[in-house]
Image 1 (cartoon, one colour):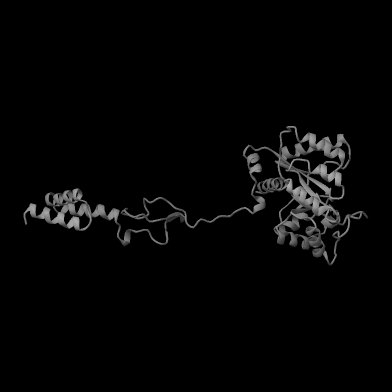
Image 2 (image 1 turned 90 degrees about the horizontal axis):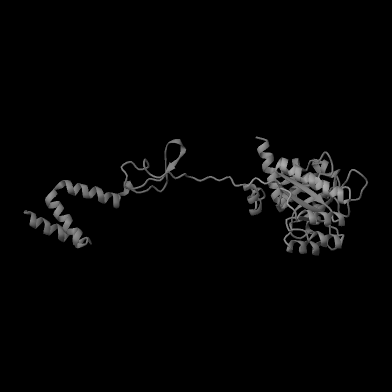
Length: 337
């Protein structure tokens, strides 16, 4: 067959298969002039664009050396060798929610600023003091006595203003001090019921801290049913650290309950000088360990000094209580390595 006839027939074949006229004509001419070599070359080129079954990506990624899987990419002589590496499967080990820093804490961590958190205790009974405490920056946590008649209403109001809410759980003290109605006592048979009642009295609570409790927090067996309820309700346990032998951190860890300890009491002695001194200590501890947490009470002196102090720059960042707890937990994990 002469070349002219071959070109004409190949052109007709190409058009029947949907190729445009220009490409069909060039292809036909190439075949006529170049023979079998151009045909085999064109088929190889086409194989790259329209891969056969053996060249398509597998449904399951192929395992290769060093534990890295690669997706086979069509058009390569050795699938996987030159293909982009794709890790498979992707396994994540996410931190629990309480260990994930909020946006505010992330900014602090990014510049390695020491952080502080403040929790105001004993709220609910003293209406004026509670009202003044709620006027503090929203980062300051509010802990309410569950048995106070006005607690449910005030806790909701504080939450509406942006504060984190805690249950100031009454617990047995080493002394004869009465921590209040429905308090938790060592060895009591109804601890779970009492703990649940106290939690239910404080709407919007995200955690608890102990009111008194120097005796109760030292008893691991009594803490267990409380920690179990906190785990079920996904609440944290902020230890007020009212006694030297607290087992809160130990028991909380056993049940997977987030926990941290108080570093500073602002107003064990109620005076302006003492509150300022304790705030200075709070800054010092924060700069040493990265985060520090203080507890205060709704005394006029404490609230006045604190409101003024928080407007000033002390080289620390005020963050929410859960964020400071996260920062302390992170520091403890690093220290234990």
